[in-house]
Length: 356
Image (cartoon, rainbow, N blue to C red; front, side):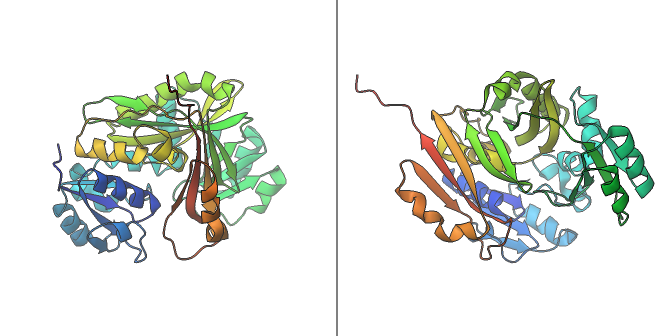
């Protein structure tokens, strides 16, 4: 168990690391950031900062030696350079290795009894054409690695669209389109002793591949599908011996939950937990990494809406502060560009208080 004053290292320097560092400080821990980008919003609220490339093994070793515990906030941290220090990192990088390859991830989930969308591995244009014919269109072609927030994805509306994509030069995966009623996330935290706790699942709405809104309570179809979705998320965590916050995204369909993808980290759709739950996802991740008892994940509000602040909308984000129980989080990013997450706003409706 990490004692107050201990140091937690965070691989990655974005807003998730920033909010993790702030929760760590609340518990009396120091944080150190490792990221290749000089302009790190996480480093601005942390202590030391290692600004080095991911393949700088000497710098990584020095970083780990300075820390009592190490975690990450970014699922695309390269796994190879972490091998010499993997046993010092929580959760173990095997979770990164699984999540970073969409094909391996889907096969892993199927082994555990989960249901992903129909898919096919794509290495050549001919394989894409066969997949579009077999699985059908519409569908989505995704790079097997490095895509997130809609990046590295192409919608295939017809076989003719597939015919036009001849410049494919990286391993990819083709997924059939899923007819769904809603999207949701299962976010859990697993402690070092194997205990698992869940937050309530928000209903998610995406715009242009980027999460726009998360709302609680979720619709009835989501609530009806939480039991099997949670069971799959727990099976993933247990098979990986995962410690910390794990997110699994699902489509709610007429035939039950369809697995979309896992994010081995705190997640955008869980930002509402900062004000809307007894213990936020960020604090519970730090607790798990530090070997501390997990906090209560119960929702403390009747209704919660989290809206992402994207691009130039950040310039007037503070204007909403006059609204009741409204909380603005700006991430300190300097450049606002289309599709870039600059912050989020959480609006809360609390249960009526009683004077009885």
